[in-house]
Image (cartoon, rainbow, N blue to C red):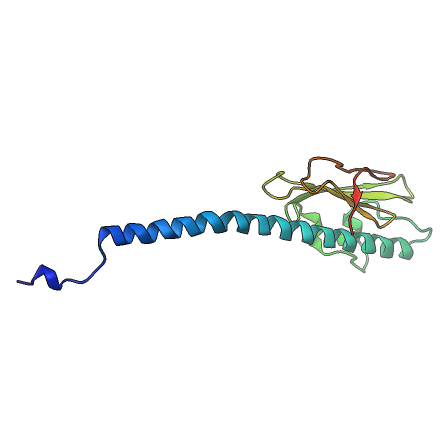
Amino acid sequence: MSNPKNQKGFTLPEIMLVVLIIGILAGIGIPNLLRARLNAGEGAMKSDMRTFSTANEAYRAAQSPAAYAPDMASLANPPNPPEYLDRTWLAPPKHGFKLTYNPGPAPALTYSLLAAPAVRGQTALNTYCVDQTGVIVGSSADGTSNIPSGTAGGCVGGVGIS
């Protein structure tokens, strides 16, 4: 028979201490990871709003008479080349945002693109809007005030994003 004193391994208190330390580290790290995910999605959406504005201006320049796109499909899946945006724009949510495109009456001389959180607080905090001026406006840092809205005439409310 083997002697129990020669057995090697961890005791229950040692294992419990390791599990406790891992739990503390996870409790500190997970909220930071979730916040970083929200920030990344918001940064990507602001970048994509600039891309959308540029694409819609390119579309407008190619039209005679000049007019903005009547819908997103005209930018991302036009009947004739070129495509101004990739097709991911046609399958929102995008980066955790629900997109609403509002062109002016035909021929569209104005537009707005509103990006609102698909689930506020989980996918994003802030609401963003861009219009024919090319200026992106957004809600306050906590997403609860100065919330912009998008109309066919352009963005209403919000504060400018640098």
